Length: 439
Image 1: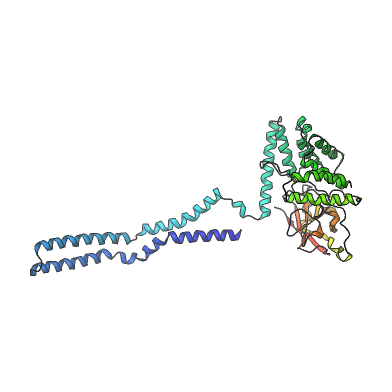
Image 2: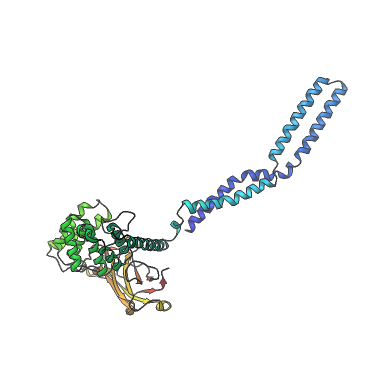
């Protein structure tokens, strides 16, 4: 941000230097310019005296004298006009001062109207502003829906907005007000199933029923296929998971991040299925972040991207004993004494590890409560949020902790946060202090 302002100021200064050069040049001659008319008059008077002397001596005729006088008069007029051009008075200097003041003000005003001032703010500030704007837009939409409740599309949009904000109960109620259209729309049924997975941190009987109902209506629905694969993988039905994700993969853009993610999960499901399989781990007990978008389910730009809890891998394949320590992190989480009054004992604490250079999706995560602090923690590959994306796959990671006022992993104003320094997988004895309040 500082570099941007310095660059902008430099450009304005350079522009002013170029524009004000004419004023400076004339200003340097202002002292001598006042004497030019007097000097020109004296010179022309001397030349006229010489001409009259020549006429008196008989060396110049009367006709030549008259012609010479006219020429001197024209020269005197020309010299006087030139002197007026180079003469600078106070109004010229005032014009330069006005230009020097108005140009920066005009630049600032135009940038405020036509530019993007928020783009130079830090990323976390931009995210907080976006969240606040989303809250306001969602509140306005909710008011409109109460005034015009017979609008299934509007209720669906409102439900998606609530999901984006992590307001699971409000989202579920909004989906419930869609009416009969909900039971006839495979995408909406899959969205409700996704919501229940996020709300309950795992699949339950109703979410499984909704997934199957969506697939009966639309066998190739991408959201239902993804969720169906996740539910099957978590239950240890690896062949079924491979079948769901195998149908999903061709529908994704080749070589995209979504396609690579599903391809990795599909390969793991096929490997487990071919090897007889082992009991699968349940879904990671964390709600997804706002940036974790389900493959192929980005909604139109006037709506909200939807996050989804992703199936977790079970314990990683056996590694040599010398590398075992690189699959986990351990340490202690503490709440700063100055912030203890800002957290309730039942507030949810999210502890997760992220790659320093890589996607924002957590590599491992767990949850606790403020009453558990200070807490000794261990994060390892068994807590991976996505198969193949685990601690042992990263070069450097950072442990982050969030006390969520909303009870969800979605960042919010007033949350208490802390993070460790960047470390390599296998680090021990980390100390993470929760010492910051999100503005």
